Length: 239
Image (cartoon, helix red, strand yellow):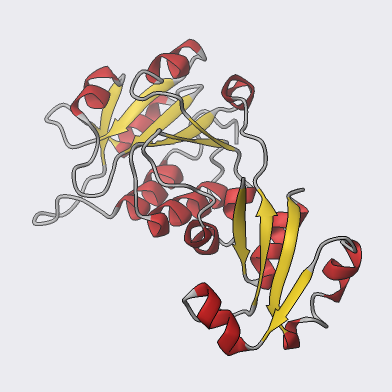
C-alpha cells in the first residue's frame, strides 16, 4: 500500500502527479529546500536525522538526502488506459528494477502512451525503478496485466498490432515495422537473458529485430526499448 520516493526531485514529481505522502524523512540541511512541501502538508509527519542515520536506516548512501513514504495510488483500469493510447509497451517478466526504470524514462521521453507489465514483472514503484526513471514512472500511465500472454487478446480487441522484439528468421526489422504506420502498436519486450516466452512470440502479430553488426546478437532490454521507441515514434502516435 505504499512506496518510497527517494531524493527531493523525485519526491516533488510524485507530489506533482497527485500522489499522497504518508511521511517525510530527510537530513536537516534539506529542511529549507523542502519547506514549501512541508508547509503544504501540515498533517504529514517529518522525521529528521543525520546523513549517517539515514544511511544506517536505508542501507545505502542517499545522495540527495530526502525521501518520502507515499501512498500507492489505485491501480489503473486497463481498458480505460488503452482507450486513447496509440503506442504502448508491454514488459514481460523483466526483473531488474534498473532496467524497468530506464525503460519508463525512455517511454516518457519518446512518447509512449502507456506501459503494461506482466504479472511476474518487477514493480515500477520499487524505489530503484523510480530513481532510475527520474520520476517518469509517475508520468507514463501503467498497469499490471492480470495474466500473460493471455493479455494479448485484450490488446487485439482494443485494435493494437502486437510486435514482439525477438530474433526469428522472419522477423521484421524495426525500420520495416515503423514503415507500416500501424494505427495502434504494442511493442513487447522480454526478460533479461531468456527474452520473450515461446507462446508470446507465437501469439504476436509480428516479431521484430534491431539490425546489428556481426558479432553482437542483442542489446540490453532498456537500450533496445529506447531504440524501438525512437524508431516507431511516428507509428500510431499521430505525431
